[in-house]
Image (tube, rainbow, N blue to C red; front, side, top):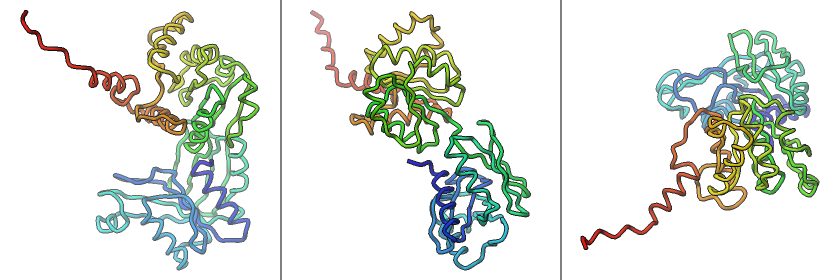
Length: 342
């Protein structure tokens, strides 16, 4: 599975190599409510074929028509705005007050799309600087904290995995979780020293390592844009990862298991001299409660909680597995008999 941005870039690159004329649209500014964030991209082929998204659909339709009519400059980058007036916002399906500003870039050999796609295939985090006057783009290494910049003369966009995920265990659930995480733009590393699992691992876009989990955590030098999820159900593996990960700045550390197993895990981890504050960072049972039973459903549950943590959203207790199951059991418990006075 490819991330949306990578799919747009790779498809635009292929169309260009086939001799097609292609316009790359990038959201560079938003005001008010907006369907898509800054940096969202759409590639439009001259015959109207598209990949990617910059809105809920209406703006895409207008851009397709403009490309077909030849209303977009195919020699140098230009700027387009949508939703400036209330009538236009309604026409293009934008929320009340929503406005989008786009850079429309005709792709050429000077765009450097080949070099960008190759760098992304190697897992690099890249800054692409586009000169609006000439259409020439240059690449440079980027930091995870860098963001999109546009001053009217130069557009700098950041491409590549800004967030990393370490998954402990290469079982079936890990396969679903890893493939979905790749689609969410994570750089995914799967750690499992058990050959019976790693020999069969085949999830595109992920890296498999066969070292012990605590060594993997140490080697990755986890930062505040890292997540660790332990899924083996084997304390000898999961605990090794958790005892090291909880000491790092990782924004999310979680482990699969029942509420009883989670309580036992916390007691085991205390023996590794983890503080109460470090133990409080552990998400377990991992995921939000959606009644999930199958591996794909469990993967969705886990990634929903990870996404909330990444976006700084504090979930209510009733959404978490432990809180939801406890409340459900309490609701099902028979009511106590009223006192008789005897």
